Image (cartoon, rainbow, N blue to C red):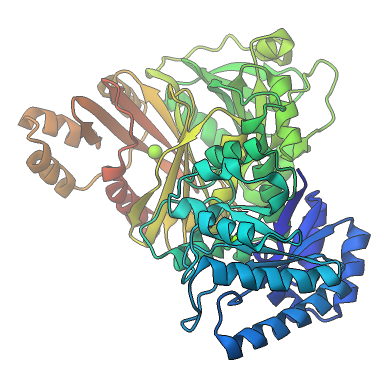
Amino acid sequence: MKTSIATVSLSGTLGEKLEAIAAAKFDAVEIFENDLVTFNGTPADVRRACRDLGLDIVTLQPFRDFEGMPDGPRARAFARAERKFDVMQELGCDLLMICSNVAPDSLGGIDRAATDLRELGEQAARRGLRIAFEALAWGRHINDYRDSWEAVRRADHPAVGLVLDTFHILARKTDLGAIRAIPRDRIFLVQVADAPMLQMDYLSWSRHYRNFPGQGDFPLVDFMQALSVTGYDGPLSLEIFNDQFRAGSARSVAVDGHRSLRFLQDQLVLKLPPRSAVSGTAFVEFALDDGAATEFERLLAGMGFRRAGRHKSKAVTRWRQGDINLVVNREKEGFAHSFNIVHGSSVCALGLKVTNAAATFERATLLLDQPFHQPVAPGELDIPSVRGVGGSLVYFLDETGPLSRVWEIEFDETGDINEEAGLTRVDHIAQSMQYEEMLSWVLFYTSLLDLKKVPPQDVPDPGGLVVSQVIEAADGALRLVLNASQSQRTQSSRFVSEFFGSGVQHLALATDDMMQTVARLKRNGVALLEIPENYYDDLEAKTGLPADRIAELRAHNILYDRDGEAEYLQVYVRPSEQFFFEIVERRRGYRGYGAANAPVRLAAQARLSSTPDF
Ligand code: MG
Ligand code: MG
């Protein structure tokens, strides 16, 4: 199918939009009338620009309030259409998209609509043009695709066809069965959009919250399956009205759009290497300058990490505890160094354990993710990697071949020893990002890897609300928490501005014995975030936990959450600069992230960061 996107989906001027669409490798474009009206040039200029960029124009849209008008307005609607036909001929576009009438003076009746469509189709055909009819979910008389199809069917004219727009169909939860019976040559255009499930009027929902396939909650694969029965092979076009996209970068939103179409098509007919399961975090790499590295490594040692390896040729060390590998990179050149120059002390890369690293990298490339390469020194491995959040890297490692022996191949064992603190594995990785980027990273992770998103939550920070979106593997082997906020004063937003971009804000490490771990940290002089007394009074009232348990939690600044029998214990290691560690213990299969405690933690951190000695 030909891939297309409507210009309304992107920010910028029409020229900028078209360039972004071509750069994202779309085949075609829908010209939204407003973009044409505000364009500083003629339709013929747009035609040339599209031709030079290799883009077909699939339709000019929308043409509103056409069918079922009483006599006077009816004549004016036909005259209006003729002027659109003039523009289309200048544009070199043969299809006018008509959406169903919302005008209060319009009249109902399928036959009346069919008569109007037939007559306009005849006018269009005289100029070699076509028209296509779409049922808006909020159309006054026609708001169901089965009715728009019936109008098109009765119009019975080769220049009159149907538009199927997934938003209008799926927002109303219309049965998809009737799609299968529509002859494929009567469907002139298919517009695909996803959206979150919201309780809202159709118009506002459609105009502000549509998003790309895979970013929302609509059953688009079911729609595509019904469509495939028809044999339709015309344009598959993204028509996405979304406030975040219109505030975002046209180039990256366009790439996301094309990625979403490839992902959608791949769910129907598997062509790409499959989404890989992730069996864990292989490593987390920190880019630090010498001063910061020394301090950070002292903290790691205090947390029970052992310096296990020294890189054979670089200023890179491996710190290890349980299954956790933290890599400290203090190189003076290369990727980590330039990342450090831009962002300061930071996580510059994540290594993920996948089933097949080469296949995952190939899938990433085919999904238009950004591959990353840097020169590999002799004796080093070329680990497949792509750009992730904020320009950091995501490396893929697997259990086959040299990638399974990266530590032996690239590092010398130090022989250093340290007493462990019971930390076993990476529990979750929290990334803070610009609000506008969140849908982009949701799509990045879920299209590439076998991960699921869980419904997002609003978390109150003293500076405003933070949206928290979890993406996780079914078995919890990888858990990512994406945080973003529209308020500039939340810690999530402050991180993004002080860090000059999105990135890992905290890393949560798991223990099987929180009491033992915190005792060990205390002996080593590692300070934990102090939790206010009131929290424990409230916890006692809320949970009815025995007084001695409350006292124990209070003594160690441990946050507590419960879900049925399952329990969650959390502490925070006092952060240096923007990044911090969390330590968690999950008991009896606790699945959450202590959302109830997040406001308390955020308030405690906000107090800390406002004191001058911090
Ligand atoms: Mg539409
Ligand atoms: Mg956390």
